[in-house]
Length: 252
Ligand SMILES: [Zn+2]
Image (tube, rainbow, N blue to C red; front, side):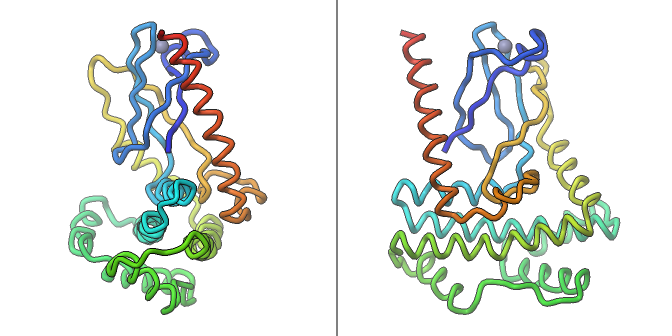
């Protein structure tokens, strides 16, 4: 799974993107370093949150035939979405970062604790019990992740669509009531990722079009099934492969 980027320093100097693109693997720290042929080294920060990226990694795993890995990434996406919600709610209550980090450390190693925190905070803010994975879904997930069950493609697709149905309506609810807090959480994420070394140029921030998306306002994007999202990823992969083959021709 790869990202396509061009040099932001060239973009800033020329006022338009160059035809020189690089493909980069997704990273845990959200920082993407581009070295261009004009000698710039720029660092661009990806705006997407962990849960948005992880869901896409799961989708790519289905395309590649790794269905256990898909279930694992979808599960992580949901868990990181709970974390994102907890951050938004704490932001709404003006909990300072230091206090938040100290409390998060108490739950960071146990997903059941995080789920408990999410459940009560969500109920407190929305006065409703949030829809979660059913017992059947949870049993299936545990069999795959903890007992070595090998799921079929069909099961991976069903599980992925289930995660979409859990997360997407909650994003809408969050955006309706907590837009300011969401912006603040994203801002803090970008701030924490964007420490620039002296020989680097800030490439600013960028968005990528993930399947689960805080930034896409398009209804068709936000309601598409996992199956149709996979079709779009396949088209994207062709574009990336063409870009890489053109670059290889140049460098020969
Ligand atoms: Zn450049």
